[in-house]
Length: 277
Image (cartoon, rainbow, N blue to C red; front, side):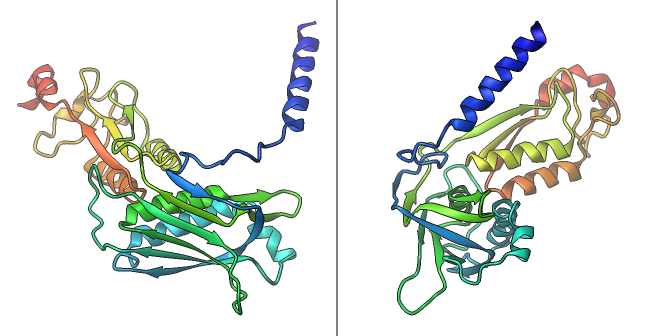
């Protein structure tokens, strides 16, 4: 009887969600941009989408790596399909990014504003393009995230499309601090898992990773000046080397996320004073 009820509930739930349609009056961009306007056109996006950089900071590796990263996300379904059935002309074939400043210092309050335009080119040119302009590389990253959210894979045509074009988006964060706290002092997590969490944060345009590394329960971080401290980890396999910490900080910076490390050294030294000597 329980199995029958469970099957009936699952069937009804599936039918409910399969018959549901998206509300065209809503804008499916998260977080919702500060200012935006859209139209009624549908544009196709070339799986060979190319990048054109401009401005003083356009040559930054942060922007280049960000484009490559988002391109893989946008075309994760369609890359193989187009090799078999490739259209000759696409509405959007170029993404232009202009970064006005070459300063890539990441700190709280850094300018993350951006302008995003997506429109089919008119006139003599048959090459369509999208355009992102930002004062900093981190604003460009937020623009790339929004652009990726506008791109949707059509499972019937097996093409990536942008609905409700043309798009005009002028956006900036509402709050300077948009963070997530992770406590690895009480529950150890491998470096790879921490990277996955940071990657997920970038999808929601969060900008501060509050990493609570050390507390009374464990001391998993390597401190070269006090090499015995990390003997306070749960096990010798549940530790973070200096290289691990550097890798996480750099990984986060490439996504516009500042790592705020919480290291309770005075308290830890008092608890583990017999190990320091």
